[in-house]
Length: 258
Ligand code: 3PY
Ligand code: MG
Image (cartoon, rainbow, N blue to C red):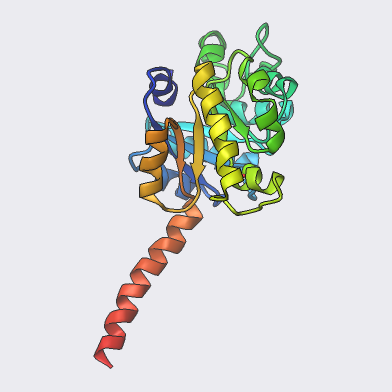
């Protein structure tokens, strides 16, 4: 079992990095920092499975859990991501009990699920097939995204599905589904998030949140509220903020010399 699952089971915070740039070097750089998990986002990027397999190689040995946000709740995408070597899946837009059941099923081998068995990279090309098969269902991480107003209405049904290791609120989609796109601090959006958070605590499922901007005070606040599975920013955002921090200092000094 990886660090992330163990931390979540103990009620601890698991911090992750978000990889949007489809190159193994970026994931390798992130894996060299003090994150518990790295997520390769295959929903909103140009990541393909060839790149994903190379990313799995790049972070191997780092001790970080490699998660994949699937393009959708799809058995084929889940199978390919796990076969490449991912440690778990983040499933977008889970709005009903049936979708939550499907999200768990696509991640697990029979009899608990429907994942197909093969001698893919995850099994060391067959050399580790029986051990991998035996331990996979307990070890794999299944994270469902609550990011639509329908999931707020159905949250008790969703969270009563066994096998969900954590939830993950997507604040942008949640706000968009409420016709308040991008208004992340709108009182109605915050109220919807609170319903989701309270339900997770009630059901004993670790609540998660994607804190998209580089905002350490917000991270501290969210942890105090009870969130445990937390993504910190985006790799693209780290580049933008790094550029701006560097340039604003340098430009200020340049201007002061004029
Ligand atoms: C959202 O905010 O909708 C997300 O999916 C963040 O990952
Ligand atoms: Mg989303």
